[in-house]
Length: 147
Image 1 (tube, helix red, strand yellow):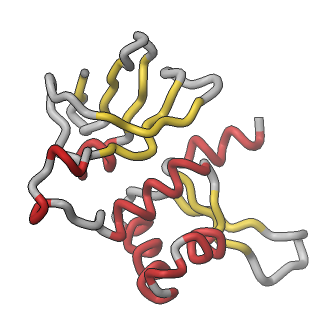
Image 2: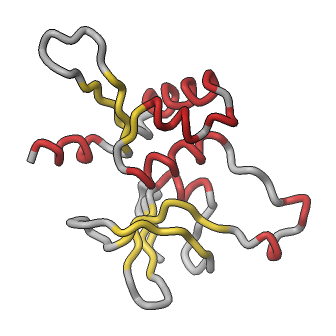
């Protein structure tokens, strides 16, 4: 495993495939060099690593019962965005409806304000006054749409 100064990390699967681990996921899981962990991945195309980690899995059997906790809403939102690439606010709200509309909407705003999520607005045409908020892990995701 390699951890950059930004906390962005890279790891290898048991089969030797490289996995990109976004900083927010590595930080929330307290990953360190030499740590052994399991993760869910999604295949990426035209990226520096063939896979991206969308969730670090902690085996419940390896944790004492009092240490097994529900991930914070911030982590759940970022993992959802990482898993889907570009998402609408409505899609995140729908996927996480059990957490409350206001809580998820506030979390999206907070994550964008802190720079952990990029946001763009899409309009149907030049005359449209109402846009749809889109979220991604970084601006490059949006820029690649125009290529």
